[in-house]
Image (tube, rainbow, N blue to C red):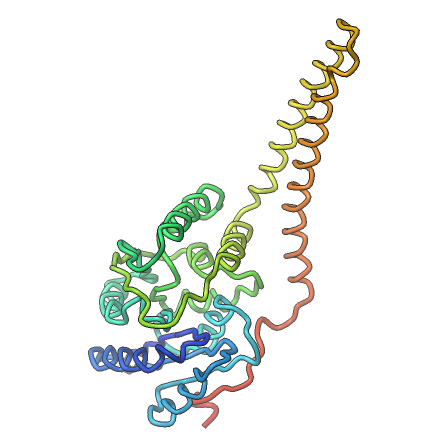
Length: 314
């Protein structure tokens, strides 16, 4: 039987780019003549005409599948829904904004056939992105690797090809705060990097403003490491030592001078420092507890409103 490739494309308000995305994906499919290709678009509750345009395209192309969420659940959840729906021997994750060129997937397929279970794209150039985003992204991956119990490749996104064996393991991982690239690293198997030049966004705007970037970084660190908790213990010990030095100094001033006000600054510094450290450590602990709370509720990861183009639906 001919091998099958599933291409998962999460979408959120991609009305301006979706036409070009469909064209480039069809051009890619024409290059891969020895594989059946299905395109699984996951509409993450778009508020524009993204789903309408996808439905029109699906009516003319039976290999297009659409998973439409009832509301916005987030990029990583949309990727998860696409993985759940994929039927291919290999599954490719790619965003709809065309920053990750579909043509690179042909090189991924070649490496997969050479025996690799995961082929992940490594960005060697990121044109069109601000200096702030480049610096923070570079710092994030390096901090994450320092804290993570599992090595995660540097400068990689979710753009990758995964063998069916890897996909089946991912589908068995039910955690809610999902960090797909870290989960794939955790799974193991034979993985290889594929350097590529990232393109500028074809149209529209980034779906990751600073607030979402911070949340995403928090998910990445806390999903794969308990070192923040260990770090809070170390900070607590250090702050206790500094406070002890302050107490000793206050006692020294009190016993050796008649000036009672001299120790006031040390006491205030110790109180404020300890208060700040305690609040920070409580915040770290609260993040982990909040994640436990979300896990034990056992709500579904996402709610599907529309599921169009799948063989079982026909």
